[in-house]
Image 1: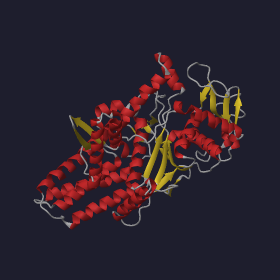
Image 2 (image 1 turned 180 degrees about the vertical axis):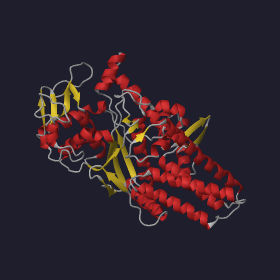
Image 3 (image 1 turned 30 degrees about the horizontal axis):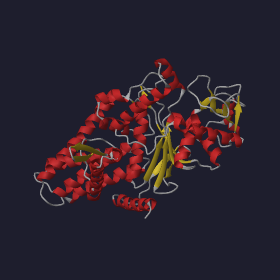
Image 4 (image 1 turned 90 degrees about the horizontal axis):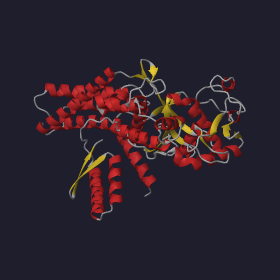
Length: 496
């Protein structure tokens, strides 16, 4: 059986389980920025979901605005997997840009050194927030030949033109321009949203390739020494790894115009295929006192600063307690409240575990099972409604209160209801990526597969095949399994 066939079997199996947890059929609905409405989620080739999210420009420490976006899309990925989809996730790294070049000049370093330093910092912060790595993190500088080829093709198609070493996309050649953002072409012509440039045919045209006069920060091209415009990078890397049609393209709300609008024009002109992206998903701003958090405004708080004061689980709870499309105002008090909510969930799980050890055999009272079922169903219904994590969390808090009340009111307990309540809360935390510090139980078949992989790695270590051993360790770590070598013995534990 092929990998795709196995994925389809797993998809149907998981959907059947999800359906059994609530009344009616599982119908995930997603808000599409393009249609400005919620739509049933129907990927092009289920169970595969092709997802691309615009990644960071690595010239400084990541701030909480970045955390808001990337925690949101990590959670969306996890929820899709919870519903049985196979997500192939691509997130780019912009490692050459004016900001990177300026930082390098200020520090007397190379742009490559700056990009490498802050890429490592970004991944460290994301790892600490339990944001799983994308399947591919392509870097702009590794795809210069692809970008130059794409720009040349756009010129050949008659939708782009060269002017004095620069190459521009001719917006008037794309009749659907403005469809995503609602920006009217006439407004652009009037110069309301763009800076005029004498080299352009009209002010709305945007750069695909920019002439560069500084040495060491550009590449040779048919149009002279230069480097790519910002927008073409994402068009090239998304289609290279995901093909001409994406199921999901995401990013912050600030990218709708001009970045994503320009991506649509470039990508659909390159491929000749309309509907480059089926679902456009955008996160709301993270603000401070109502103003967007931004390095350019100087009103930002770094992820590292926050994690020195609060746990990763609390940070995720804080961010997920607001719907991903709504703005969040950053407040330390909000993080304190999230820390308190996290402690409540963890304490409930601790109490359930301790009570299970003392409980009598039996399934437990029917009314408690009904409450667990009701909250589990409502948790799933909330996730199906455009990934509504605030509502989903409210049902987990409610279930925790009801389980604690049950423990308070009874002198003796039956194990079945406690084990089931614990499983539901643990699974909810796992689905949302909330780090509780608790080891979640795993199915017997998964445990056996982990043990097989650990044994294969141990055999590689005995044969001194360090490359294979390191690759297996890293793959297991990315899947949430951490290994600890103690002499000839390897211990493992699941961290998410």
